[in-house]
Length: 188
Image (cartoon, rainbow, N blue to C red; front, side):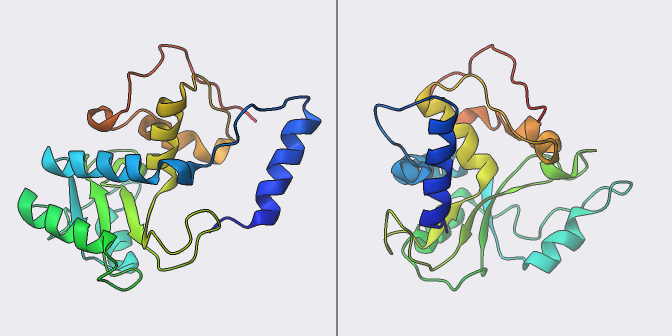
């Protein structure tokens, strides 16, 4: 989880660039909103709870030249997925036992679109929320929703995230508000 030293370094960098802020916000301020958005995806049949281990997910994901295979848990009912996700939130399962994954396309040429994880179980104390959350949203899911909530139109990132760009505005079914039509540039 975030190291307070890193948070302070980011704040120092923003000041060095000549900016200040009226209200300091953290992604963790939106954990409940992210959680409700994830539930909405489950209700729409666009996300599922997966019991594959990290190693199994890698094997099922395929390669750059071979398509992936669907998780055996991909077709659970909405009711079962909601129940399992709520139990994940309640802290009933150990770290890594389950993930919430988006249903996208296991044959996509972009390996990052092959049913990416949206949430993982991690029982750890968070600097802002303490032990209130035993599940955490993954970066791509939280980033897109957080920017939507805050009205961010441009997001800068380094090139290692270029293949993640299609996830930047996905999935629209849970978006807090419509995305800007502004183009996002991420060359760094």
